[in-house]
Length: 262
Image (cartoon, rainbow, N blue to C red; front, side, top):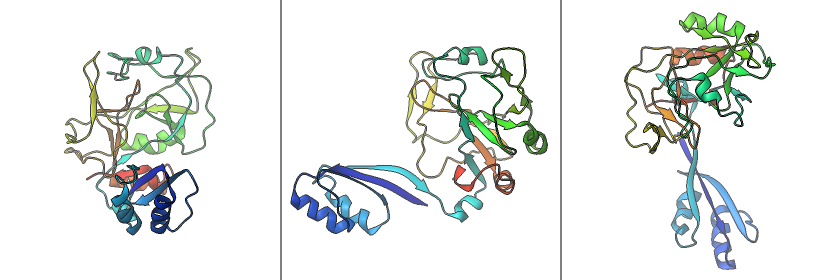
């Protein structure tokens, strides 16, 4: 696994410019610079000595896993399908209309009580898996893909309605994901507690490996914990190694959409 960091800041004088350019081996311009570096690289280990001296910003921006780390992982976190644009944020009642015990303040929710409503029949390709923009962690599938893949995994589905009417979407269905019985071991991950509903919500981005669940006898499942920021909250989707490999073979997903658990 490679951890990538972003170094950026204002170049205040020629001396500072000369030092940074000698490390990075490139022209940094006259005022501001930004550079993404592998945490284990020679360049990063040289430039980090000057972060405080030159008042630079240094932060982790992401991780890149090797093929073996992904393909050999027992359990992986699936980052989701291509999002499409419903529900809309200007219609905040979608949360309370769809879920029991929903909280608009943090976006957390309880059991689903009604079908999602989309504006129109989506134009999705065969074998497509899509996500909702405002409830991350819910997966919607092209109908044939559900029958040929997800139904065989023992997963139920739910219809999706059109235009707030009783008419059902023909091309897409919602996949009903079971929840983990046990919590993740994520004591070191930052979270916020909603002042209104008191539920915890963990930061939406985890750098590096995703926490390994104790329960591993599943094909695809979602966490009981919420992740997100602001008014958005959603569960994370976990898959077994065999499910991940089937999704790759069928081109339901690409390798970069999986984060290995550890």
